Image (cartoon, rainbow over all chains, first blue to last red; front, side, top):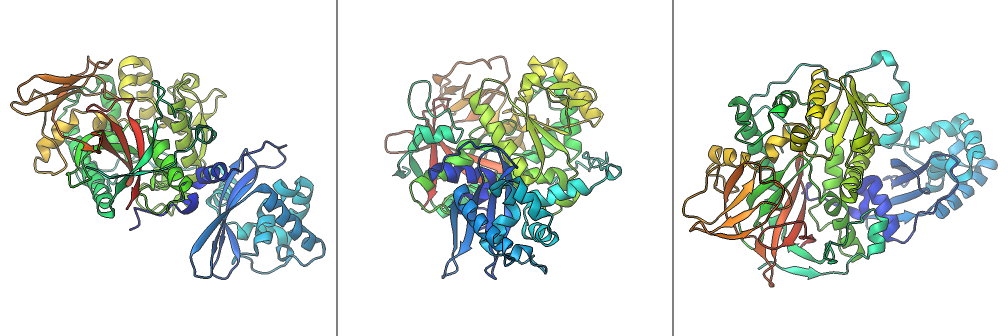
Length: 191
Length: 392
């Protein structure tokens, strides 16, 4: 029954769910110095065990994430990850970048996802480790490509779509002025 | 008698941190109840189906009102009629969300439609978020609720662009158009409700912003925030009938804006047809055999217990319960007495063991999407309490 649906751990509540999760779990939002736009992330484990970013929302609060994984029985488990935990994983992965073993800087197809630490570093390096490191990583072609392909969130896709459109392709939000027939039964608002 | 399950309530600090500041009513009682209504899967399913069927009847009834020019009968301010017609003609004026108020649905009592809050429904924060938080806080299975409100409204925002059920094409078709959200400054509940809707639209992928109503600038070229940014969409948590009667100049300007296709206003003007309790009479005439409808008339109904309401009363104001002999057994005052009256067959709400009454609120965003309850006395007013639910 799709409509009486699961809200497991607030994931269906989008960015509001992340706020709810963090308040209910006692991780209050602490103000911190802004460097790069912080995010709420929903990171999802794929059937192959790798991770992708399923949702991404900009936030004025600290970085936070919900990690959605499968347990041994195949049930979906979700856990909340604070900024400190994300930072620790990002730092650990960044060490691997420095010695060249991180998958974030490998060439090849990363669209199937990466490990959890790699995924977090790939999408939030700047806001977790600072702009200098973030920018340096983004200058690495492989890293930039992996960062883009591991991020499947609507936010990053629509941001990319927006920036790539020229003003000449401007469409009308009014959907053309052709009114649809309003004859009985033709309307599509109903269930 | 309905069954209730006792739970731990959310404490006020947590509620405030979530942005929910209206947790205590003016008589110092808690607005969020520390019990849940226990609903069976079949009851939840029946509410779902009822909302979908009732919405379809509203669409037919609105079409009937427009074709037969029955705006006066519904008490619609004359200066809104053109916008109502115009918004009805083009699907870009997409209805984002509404809430049906229903009697029955539990304990074997049939579901009966009381009214449809189609224009500016509140209780959204409670239903979409607190309902979920109550189960979470009490370590209950979060899947046992009929509450897809957040996701359903988010998806429905995408339909402003895709204009049909399938929202897949949103990313491809969306071109950066912005939605401005507005509510009256100084009303926490309305502001939080509006900002929650803004968050849903942002999650859907829209560029959004918020501006208090008094800071929004309108002219024939469009709708602007205080920094002169122009918006393609404007969502106002402000009743259309108040725009028509108290803000006639604004109504004129909005009409030009709509005529010139400078902005789309949400919820659309035609939702005022749904909102008018006068439409309950039209629907009853069109669908007299529907199990969901109560007999409704523009004149007092002979020989049955009934409720007199004004077409645009809110929060139970200006309501009279009249018994079969025409005697008033209960009534409330209010500011809506100048509006036309409708008479609706009386129906009993579901009751708990203390005789407290429960009205179901069923949210609708393209389809029925979530359930909440209000607990109160015979006439549900703004002292009634929010009660969450759990599916047994």
